[in-house]
Amino acid sequence: MTQQTILNATHRALGAKMVDFGGWDMPLSYGSQIEEHHAVRRDAGMFDVSHMTVVDLHGAKTRAFLRHLFANSVDKLKVSGKALYSCMLNESGGVIDDLIVYYLAEDFFRVVVNAATHDKDLAWIEKQAKAFDVKVTERADLAMIAVQGPNARAKAQSLLSPATREKAAKIGKFVACEGDGLFIARTGYTGEDGYEIVVPQAQAVDLWNRLLAADVKPAGLGARDTLRLEAGMNLYGQDMDETITPWEAGLAWTVALDADRDFIGRAALEKQKADGVRRIMVGLVMDDKGVLRHGQRVVTAHGDGEILSGTFSPTLGKAIAFARVPAGTAESAQADIRGKLAPVRVVKYPFVRDGKAIDGI
Amino acid sequence: MNEIPGDLKFMKSHEWARVEDNGTVTIGISDHAQGLLGDLVYVELPSVGDDVTAGNACAVVESVKAASDVYAPVSGKVVSVNSALADKPETINEDAFGEGWIFVVKPSNLAEESEELLDPDAYVELIDSEEH
Figure 1 (cartoon, rainbow over the protein chains, first blue to last red):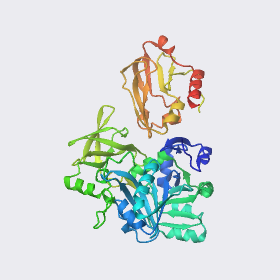
Figure 2: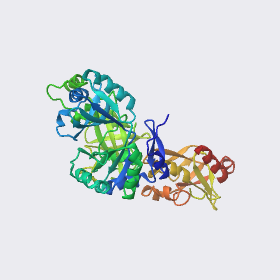
Figure 3: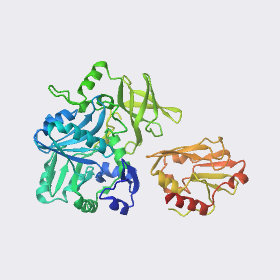
Figure 4: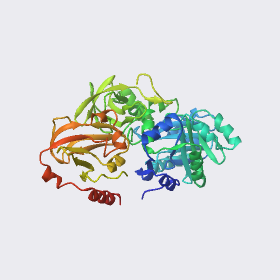
């Protein structure tokens, strides 16, 4: 059965076109998704991300548990509120999910995982948690609104009490604070500054409406996808899955091969690294007209690859994509668009950061 | 939704066709179709001189979301294409039944093939039934 967030009726009242996403009935767009995209790049937009799963972990051995569970190292989290992006791997080094973990106290960490992977993530976390005596609590009582864009923080702050506003204004990137019953994290999935605000369901509609009144534009999953791809951020299930390691998904930067940490999947990752990684993820830009799409074949000097995420970039006005291609692919390739080979440039991503095209894109 | 002009005929796949006074047929996609696709960002046009066959794909419209084939409502030779769409594909979003036309065909079998097309009332009935 399709699930609904607490904001479902609010989206419908705003005229949203709804779509099934990971078993959730979510807004695709409220009008033009390109205008929603630009609103986030140029001003402030908001997304209902309540479909994502918030999981609280309690117990004296929570840090030890997460040192084992995640490929990135929670040892980097030393100050309460600090967040870390990580993959959770299986024994073969394949990605079960990507997530954000927040350190709140030695016996309390919060994890936010994807909606589409909810069941398997919880099953995996609970299974692994037993040995560490960590209590796993899904927080289905919480909703989440992402407020993103160059003016997002100022607009969100205008709605907070003076004490909470002061805290929220002070936190650095990838840090969270609490106040007014909200969990406010300076994180996001758009390449813009902003907050992801975890809010009790009972307050969520009111917060959404107050953000709307503060001239934050509602934006749907369509804009969220073009924003995150421009920002060079992976989408689980499309850019990586359980058959793909972080080395093959452009996520090497999230793997911490620190000494004395035996995380799940480490042995497989080290072996693959020693043997040589044969497929890599690259960015593609097409200067000709047309759109790169998921599933299109990519022809390179080293063999064929495949487009993972592809779209029209509203900021650049041309098509961009992530592709998995044979290692060694550099500079140029061709995309097979309906049987015609179109030249594409192989580039380092992100494509766009803080509202502007990256040099060389 | 925009008013549907009474002189249009439709395919079930949401193309429209209008027989002009000079006997050519102008072809586009319906306002309903552009709404389903969302913001259009690219149109692959046929070439002038191409022979097209009723029911066959002969152009492609791409939105941010998806690529969609455009089928020829009637057979014939392409005599004109809307090259303005190359730079402004969003014209189809803004005026699907007018400035957003895609190509013009000199028909070869119009009398018979136009029998297969839906009049505006039947088309509205079809999209209403698809929505429910």
